[in-house]
Image (cartoon, rainbow, N blue to C red; front, side):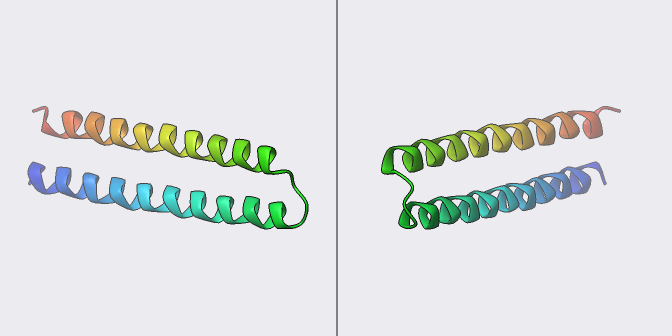
Length: 76
C-alpha cells in the first residue's frame, strides 16, 4: 500500500511539473508577442532567462517535495 502511495505522489509531482512547463511556455509566448510589438531583444532574452530560472527552481522544489513525502510515507 505504501509503495502505491509513493507511486501516486510521483505521478502528482509529474502533473505539477507539466503544469509549470505549460506556464513557462505561455509566458515565453507572451514575451515573444511583446517583442514583436516593439520590446527590445535584450529585454526579451533577459525575460526568457528569468522565466527559465523560475521554472527550474520550482521543478527542483516539486522534486524535493516528492522525495520528502516518499520518506514520510515509507517511515513506519
